[in-house]
Image (cartoon, rainbow, N blue to C red):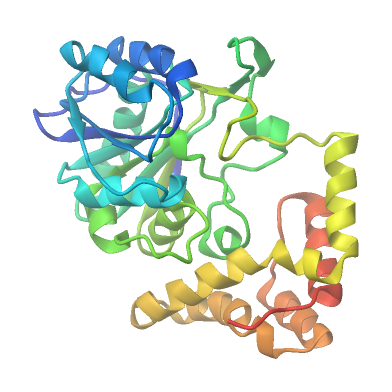
Length: 330
């Protein structure tokens, strides 16, 4: 893992970089996103877009920008959801580098340059044939782009450098709208399995297990928070804590917080078992076999694995889930 605070980047070769954009009813904010993409100091040769069945003017907005941006449409059946929509965009790309874009954010003019600079640093150290992923911080903004918080990671009380395989199995720290990946990672990570809760989480897991993750410290994205976000930031408000408490007090509700991790772990184990180191197998095995264990066995297995989440509150909630939650089998 590495980080950078300086951003001069070599311009990618033609065809080397592609931005992928999954859209759904995004007309309200899409113009601002596309304008920020057109203002990049490093322009992508291709913007590949897949719409998930929008019922607003999303398609019309994109058509207006086709004279300015190199938009390529990927036609696919609607109703896939954000994760599956991004997964098919990634599968359709043949570029050496792919960046993920959300329809409602706004990028700083040097956003692509920052990420490419960090990718170049990773490649200089590890080589181009190693799976690599770059992500970064964001600024939280409201619907009108007014500042809410200067740092997503500070707001969420997350450590962006906690990107080891064992940590990522339980909690994702990679925000999709900041992600840049290389071809080596895509070749290994695709297709994204249906069991993956989100595409960015799966990419981060594969990069952590078999490659390396880089981090751009300075926020280069205005991460817009509004009622239509598929995934958004959640602060430690009284309302949020009350919702979590209600969930944790329900035996099924408590385990619902962990079941996506277990499902993803099973998919990862099924695909990559023979590639994993012995340490990685141990990190994965306790989570894969969790449904067959008693509450005390779950606690013991997690403690032996050193399993924990970000901060004391999350970790205590996690162990309470293991003790109290009712597990549904695979």
